[in-house]
Image 1 (cartoon, rainbow, N blue to C red):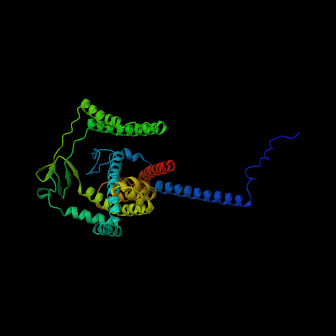
Image 2 (spheres, rainbow, N blue to C red):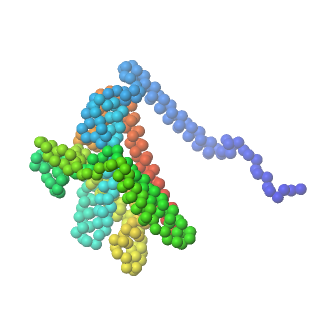
Image 3 (cartoon, one colour):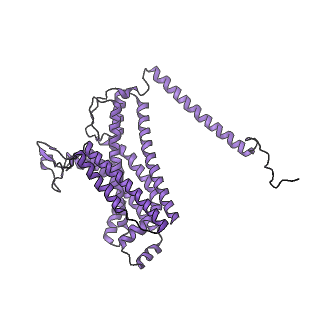
Length: 397
């Protein structure tokens, strides 16, 4: 009596299932990995032996010692009596201060220039092309030094330029009006950010409900309550003050307001202008990758060109724009290490000073590599998630 279901073939051993070519490939892979591990073990053992022979301490215990180094321009509160660990944290904050703001500004400026290159206005498109070609062909270090020397050549504080009321530009940097921030203000801003996230989630849920039953539901009351009303209530409960602090000249320097040091300002301008030139070409090529029929169909419907670009062309161009844009974000973050050339104390500058004071070269360089690797991987993960989300939304359409 035969069974209706065929018997499964007998299982073979894992190595028996491999043919001669697969076994040969496996052998070479194991051999290469073994050689790599042996080299790493040899280098590590040799390094430890040489350091011990020269009586150089190893490990990260030095991070708990007093740093003793000054950091003139810091986003976080710092004193030379703080530890090396806190000095590294301040350096990381200074690096992120440049990278995050630089990415936002370079994206906005690069997008505008990329769109301008495709403008029907001949003069505007030629100026945009000149901007791209000049800034892409000049090394970033030269641009950085140019902006720094230019900042140093500005007039002194007493003769500072005032392009707008309350704004001063001098060799002390760019001085702007500011709102003093403390725990109450940060709590209000945190509430507003959480409200934006909650409003976005509610809007997506309402759209999903509309797709099921066809009934439109307004999302603006939720957004108004979560983004505006709730932060106002929190501000009143905490007694947060939103008084603008205007800078004033006192003696040879300014008091009050927000001061962007010449080193930071020069670094930010150089990174933004240089990176925006590459982003402009990415945006231009992304827009040109959209079929011409999309423009013609939108024009046939009588849509405005700005509306077509914002609602039809750019969403489709993002498929082409996002992957190379990720590389430019990573380049901007890594290029911020050139700050050491003009004396801005970012992570690399703080690490160099720490290395000179402690002699812990391996540990310090390892920390620099670990921090930049973490930042780069975080940017890549976020951009990959965003790219996948765009592709998923397109497939549903």
